Amino acid sequence: MTLQETMISQELANVDLTKVAALQQKRTLAFVNHFVLTNVQFLNNFMKRCEQKLMDFDRKLEKVNAAMVLLEARLSSIPELNTTTPTAAEKPAETTEAAPSKETPAPSSEVTQTTAPDPTPEAPTQAEDTVEGKPQSHPEYDRFVKMVQVGVPLQAVKLKLSLEGLDPNVLDQILGK
Image (cartoon, rainbow, N blue to C red):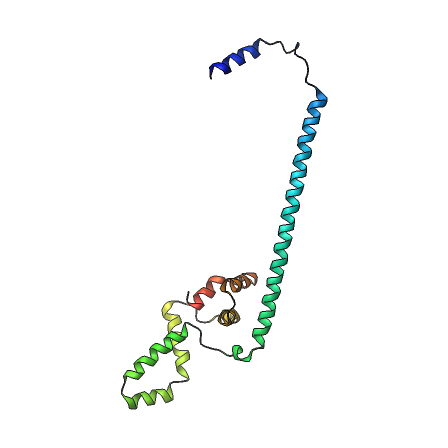
């Protein structure tokens, strides 16, 4: 304790509280009422602003959801996207397979070119999936992969995945990121 604090505490100990005038109750009540009123007004305004911001955010989310539904409908109407196409992870495997076949002698490369077109897209994908530890097939993720291939932002596709209860990390594994 400092010297001032000890002097004040000694003076208060010597004061007879029965002889001290009472506080003005009306003034104290007015201060308390003012305090309560200003705090309630502040909290009401704060709540209104928060609610408005949440409503705006909800409207924006609904617009994004509607746009995603429209985009999904458009994507499903494109016949080329409904067939199985090689993904970005499969394309490098095809190029690496094509390079060794060019280095072989001419007669054998012609034979492999005539017999190999059908099995090459399927064989490397299965081998890559098992070698790298990726899941072999995710049919429920196919339409999301197509959305990314068409140019939909990856974060928007991940948001749609999570809204549908799927894991966005699996999409990253499928895309090879």
